[in-house]
Length: 225
Image (cartoon, rainbow, N blue to C red; front, side):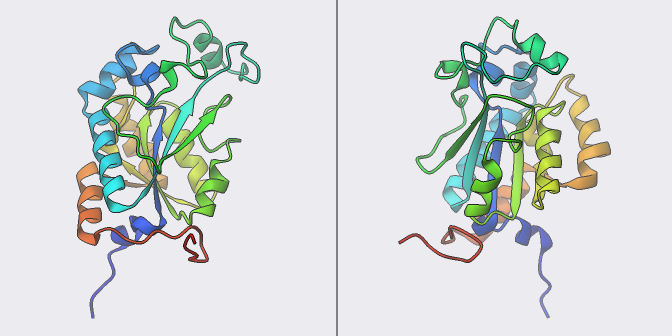
């Protein structure tokens, strides 16, 4: 009797969503507000691997969601209850709504069917943004978390996903943090305890083996009219 592959089930395109976290021009682009983080994301290959995963998701019929952190020019609604937020207010590059800084960074492709979720507050793309409802509406069971940073945004997204009942999957070569060697420590000692840790190539290989599925819109298996 053939045995089922748990990893294949976790990455089933019909119930998997690929999430990019703060992969925006003002964070990982050449004019980043956080140049050290941007440099590591590029030098490590993490940003290229995010782009590979997004392109592979488009080909396989996997829903892509881009999580963008931004603020209004007047700062209304922005968090100020942590040192990180107060430092961000003084950075020379601001993640202002409607500016180039909050556009998805190259070389990540953005498809017509991609969803973009923007947050004005907090540390996580899943906290108070409506993303949880969107994921449930499209039948998501596994959330693949990519992007930056391994210091704050990625662990927050993973913990929130697990707390909300999703299976979190982290391609360790598609996330980055500072200093560069911190990412491996975070993955080994923290994320591996709560998420499935894998690689970009393993995810892409699994999708290629499956071919393009017919995505459903929710857990009931209803397709759009």
